[in-house]
Picture 1 (tube, rainbow, N blue to C red):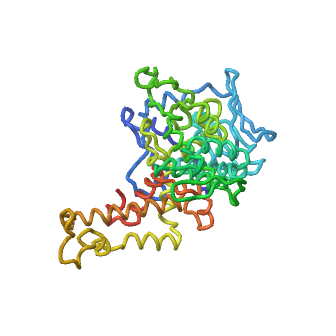
Picture 2: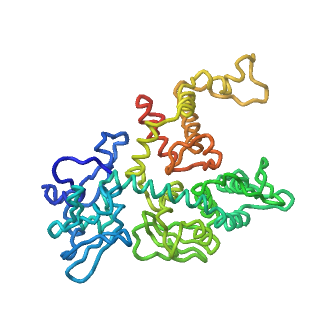
Picture 3: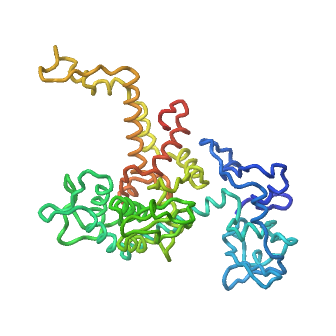
Length: 445
């Protein structure tokens, strides 16, 4: 629980905008980390004007409030007969409070709730909107919920392992005499890696060979990595198609293709609309990414890793991402710090020896059948080195960083999958390297 201070403490956000003179302008609420002085990305969360905020803050006049210990929820009753309830210990300032302290709740005029013994206030309209505290508190709460969900899914491996294995076994190209072949396509490469990680296959150079008797892996592969791999393969095969956000009426010309008209996964929890075939929908449902025809809360950050172009997501401005970037930058483990340092300090001379001219430096002339190679200029060489460094750093983040857990230990990394082209990991690499090496902007590109 946050430390107490003198005077009344109120969790405020949009409601404060009503007293500003910038009523018709776009207003920034910050990243949720402003109070600790963190501005590495130069991005801020932007909401609508104060006039829009005023409109969303209207609610019926409350007539009473109380705490229900049997459900652990605070109840607000309104004069029109309606009620609103919320989990008490999800509110900032009440997480570690005693039952007696939580029960000491009273109305604060017609707009707020007040806990005198805790010196805590909350605005009813913000609670109804799902805002249970400051932006940084909400980011921490979302991270905690995501971590708990991942742990729960890890323990429920048996419930989703079979549908996932069946999905990949049918969706990846297969030849009886060889096995599953990935043809060096990213989605299929990751799909083959999943079958190996789940104990259903053995790896070979071009794919995965099925085992006669599958073995349950210990520890099981990460749920979030498996979920990302399913989305990769489903989109690769056209089994999952994302629809643009903001289109009220689907267009038959742009949205409907063959046997997949419209959408059957509604936009929800920060994710946009999509259409999935029966097979894809079933495995998404088994993984807990879809429920009742809508994306679940857990699906949002998984979909960040694929980052569908149709949705134009800006997750790098999300408070959860910014906080994770701060944590990743200030809490780099020694082994990962050493690996980053080795990549960053790799010199140009090493790469010069790998150019065609460098390979033939000791020869008197090129082979008679060789084509003429234009010598690499210093600018070209620097560009090649920077590009290689970025690729190596991306691979490091693919292996050793996850949004829910931050930096993974070597033991934790064994249950992870290297998800190539992970948009979330690449964005995190840019943020962290920009923070750690401000004098090397090429590492944050």
